[in-house]
Image (cartoon, rainbow, N blue to C red; front, side, top):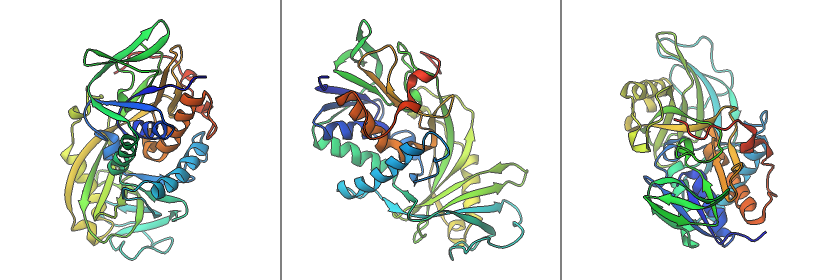
Length: 365
């Protein structure tokens, strides 16, 4: 096959940035089109947690393992410090009121001094790590731009096609020509219709960023019971910049028209901050720096869509990664770059993620 000279990537989240980066490394001219800004949605508001083997029991296992290794390689290759580091990871149990019976089941980090029980170890510095998501996304795109990639701010209104062949996209009423188009717009992928894509849901979640310096590199996953009996599963991810990320609330609000329309629940964010405060005195005394919300893209079977768009030559899709977008973006980007430039993928098996496996829902909300 003749490699494309110009590829258009729709979406400047971490998946789109990874696709652009690996295409640019192969000498392909890339234009990234983004409506709002780099990492403006889930890629800028996620925890950035990475795990080697947590997906081993699903078809995601090989993709996750390949991507975990790529994260380590990228941290050495990319000059920008985006907060990559290895972590220890623990399971905790705590209650909004009262304490959990019994003591720690495994030796607990000394900074965990609140009424919480360390129930087990989930990972070590060999198997778990983190990045700062917005900085990682920006670093990938900066490296791509250093190799000639262009970033265009505009609204993608649809694809331009001749028969069954896609030859570009419509951006703010203008046709932007390209030899191939990659749709990587998170839960907004395919909103414009005209392509045979499965349905993609937006799963909303809340998070807060706390100001708490000198918290060690221990990621915490909690079993947390509220005073009214409801249970939550907050995640607490300390970062090397002196902040601590906490997420875990969710609701079923419909996906808005754009990232700017995402609404934040003050009550949900307050609940997360209180949950973190049950872990340690340091987090109980921490102030909230940011309250935020985002929608993660998920499919009907819980697996991402990575590959050719059925029935549309020249069109590719990469979305639906759910909670593992930050982890699996590098392997997704490399695999799509291989597929687009060589016609086949050598790095990982994409067959479990073939968009053709699910029924078509050309337009969804």
